[in-house]
Image (cartoon, rainbow, N blue to C red; front, side, top):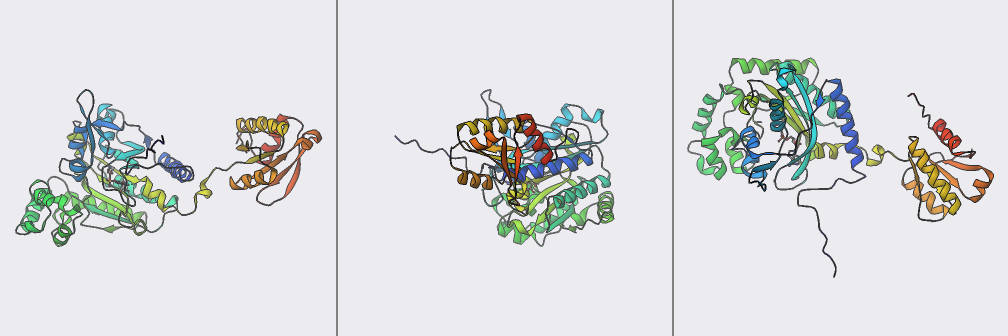
Length: 429
Ligand code: HAM
């Protein structure tokens, strides 16, 4: 009986060799830049108590209402696969009393998130984020610093065609008068809103700005915006953020309708948008969340952060994957059992000496082994048969120039040294 194939879960995807090279390039670059900015890595669990997200992200957000992977475990506890990282980072920050040792904690974490959205181009149910949080300060310089770093990082991996959009969502003091005005504006128009937004009118009117339903969007485009209702302190904060961005020549535009999909934001909110992604056009998003630490049971400590969508970022990196691959330094084409034994020893000794080596085990002829060397993009190919072993010299071909030179094979050690010289590998780089 033929067994049926088991496929991956819808919206969950494998990232294969050929793709992972770009991922590693991005991650290495991120780690390098984060180190320059004094940001330390934190590793947090993928599973948390459901209440963390319900309280952190907000009960009336799409994420919490519709998109979380929540289940009861065998001990009857409600658990959720994290839909984002900020709530978890803040939980860890509070749990480990990090505020006692650092006035400003700069943290990053990289890993998968889970949201049960409708899969489409650039939108998955498991996706990865590069997440950065600065916790402990409300200085607008920090908001600007984060955005400056984000833009620097995105251009350092080759992204062009980016637009930074910013907004201010004010603080809890600015919200009541705005809420009243929006509710007044929408009164009489309820019929045109989707059932969710009709509910949001009472629970969380700001969320209506983020609704994807066309009829809701048509109504909300002419609604008053929160930016016009923020108080003097928030206004001043926003003005200073803009000034610092300008100081670093970071171009941005104010998008007064951007509200972000999570409830914890206060004051600064931002997104990096690109035209090249189609409908899912945000490659990164973030903002300030000055009430979150307190809402999650900690002290009154402000924070600001962002997350980059890893899949979206990688899909925008120019150049094919080969350019990012770590190809073999040397491919050993061996003919005959004796030569294969030698190649087997040599390949493993080279690898142990830090040289990327590959060989063929199929027993195919020279021509097909050379083809293989070409295919794996090897820098050099060493050709060994019984004659070469007997004469203690073997041809080494530079695969880029096609030039061939004889390489003496006195001993394993001398050969390794030959390759180290050739590749200019030294013990003290
Ligand atoms: P977010 O806007 O929900 O913010 O997600 C950030 C980024 O993750 C998005 O701009 C997008 O690139 C990517 N993303 C989101 N959902 C998906 C999906 N279903 N498939 C593929 N990519 C996706 C947050 O998560 C906040 N925690 C960011 C933050 C950190 N705010 C403050 N600190």
